Image 1 (cartoon, rainbow, N blue to C red):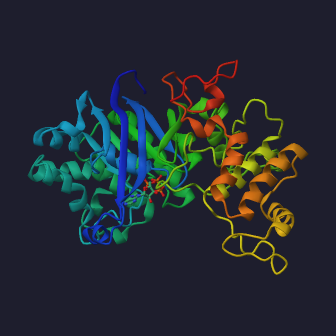
Image 2 (cartoon, rainbow, N blue to C red):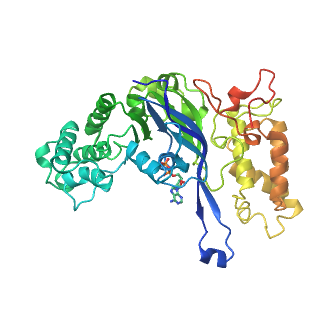
Image 3 (tube, rainbow, N blue to C red):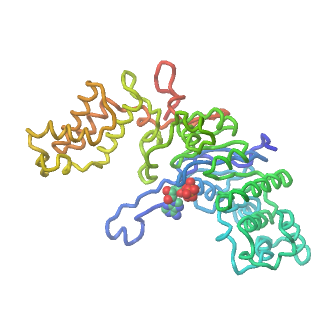
Length: 435
Ligand SMILES: Nc1ncnc2c1ncn2[C@@H]1O[C@H](COP(=O)(O)OP(=O)(O)OP(=O)(O)O)[C@@H](O)[C@H]1O
């Protein structure tokens, strides 16, 4: 049962990994690059609840879990457990925290030492923390194994003698050995056959009520999240974009990313399959250089155009995508006109500019545009005829810049907050509630 008592508080947590940061890199003058795996997340976990953390691969879920457990050093931010600042704990405090907060990893094949018997594996945390001795210890291990659905008579067997589901049960028994309060479950069923997944999730649910456990459940699998969670936090590129009760998230998702994520789940019926869908297109940008403003704006099907713009969303998106390619200089100008248009370092000769612009528009622009907008786009492409990337990008920025790229929307603190300008703009269109 979820309560109002806060057990974990995460406040402005950041975890950056540094690349090009070795002595050799510095010797060769390489600049260190930050991989912003977790970039300012804040959330609470209440006693007895299961909070889900969901998002595409690479969005920072595991790093959030590991950093809040102090298995990774934070770059910035604060985590409180039972009111204590986890990163300021002394040795005794940290030992107690390591007892109270445990983790179950995704892969039961690699997280169990193949040379140890399962009795030794489950007993190991008791050894490390010097808890119980002799027959009391053995009894405890036997009880734990039985509680997770394994036979206590299998104590002397090795992990390879068990199936995937059974091995995950061993991992769960080990995590429970020290009677923790809080478990981070990192994709606990992703490596298992579908038929076994529900059994393990049901076991975790039973254990939660029996031992008053609190869970942070990390999963990219929406059906797992829906089945098991009380509340859900949706992550995108190192940030939380929406958080709320599981029912609200699934029945009235607010953030365009959450909506697209839900729409991307395969549909059971033909009618559902044929419904219009806001699917996720494009690649997730790199956490080394995330987009300015709202990080989802480069893929968002509802990116907000300037007020007076008379364009359909798909046309606006086509222009935004074009601009982004220009900003990344991700267009091969040399090959645009084939043999027909001469191109050298300075660009194309004056007389070939119209043909160059036409050929480039054909290649890059995915939608027909009304004449006034076609003119602006052509002006930008003409700048590329002179290899002036900055001018081309500037022409498009001047007319088409979105609030979504200027400002990163805040995640509010209400029951179901969302970090999206669609909800942060006042009725008169003024920018409000953003940073
Ligand atoms: N030790 C590391 N060094 C450099 N980059 C890392 C390291 N660990 C993770 N990352 C990067 O940080 C980002 C977040 O990774 P993380 O594993 O937390 O994401 P995730 O949402 O859990 O994804 P997955 O479900 O695939 O594990 C990724 O871009 C990843 O490549």
